[in-house]
Length: 368
Ligand SMILES: *Cc1c(COP(=O)(O)O)cnc(C)c1O
Image (cartoon, rainbow, N blue to C red; front, side):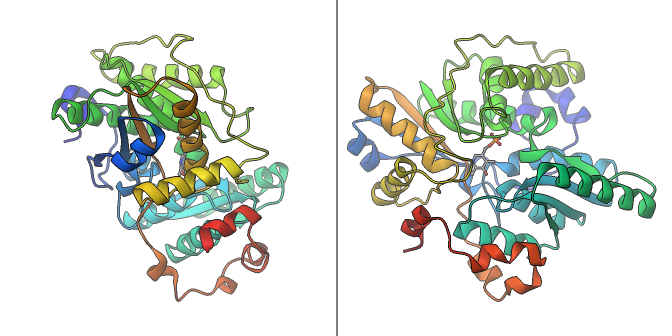
């Protein structure tokens, strides 16, 4: 029984849910890294270990989204992302697990080694991969897929939005806040003053904010924006928060309606860089520091940029005695053996250039 359902049993009866991951994910104290940064109480939440063979933050959302797919007996799931999308991959992995076909509608992104790995693993899981050059052609291709599916099965496939971020997916992170509360009560971590987390399609940060509010925890979420400002901004955070809250309240009136204040939403916009998935010097320095002092692998698109924000705050603000939690959203399960035998030429030709073109310059630090 997941912690959210223990607190709100009515939700257990009303919400679709399928167990896919391994929870609770550990919280660990990072002593050496903390000393390096002048933080006496630096912790990490290991959502990188949330599942096998693939962890990361999307597993929590997919437990609800796949639950819905099972409940409505769909044959296929269609989702969106950029070529190297961790979300598209997680969807492919866990759709395969529950016997549903997945279709990934993809847009181009800057090249990196992880893009290659994610594409190969998605292919291995039987995902149908479509990349389009522009948003317009993606929409046209998506309509085509929907009609094809309709003709074949007489109904639409389940559509999962980019990043798995809708009211339902976000409940995975409302539950994550309940999970953290239990870890605080068990003495695994003091109540955090701040929680640093990447802000992409937003339901990770927003789900946490909602869960923390309901539980009356004082921890403040510091969302570090790593996507375009048009996608992730204050208004959209409030909108998603309200939608998730309304959904939970409508299913179980005991779940309170909460208010998010201006003070609650302080997005850090300074580490995005030039473009989504284009690595930054600061982000890669953060990756290197985490590797050196904690022996953990971050990456350049999300977690490096987010950890860079934490580092900057540690150096410029008085956080010495504060409890700081870094929420690791990136998968750390090694799937290199699974994809080792795969040849990229089996992928749709439009994706071959990721394997023949060089990776972006800053990725080379990681590949050395
Ligand atoms: C998707 C993703 C995020 C962002 O989470 P959102 O819920 O989309 O904001 C952060 N880190 C990693 C590694 C991700 O794959």
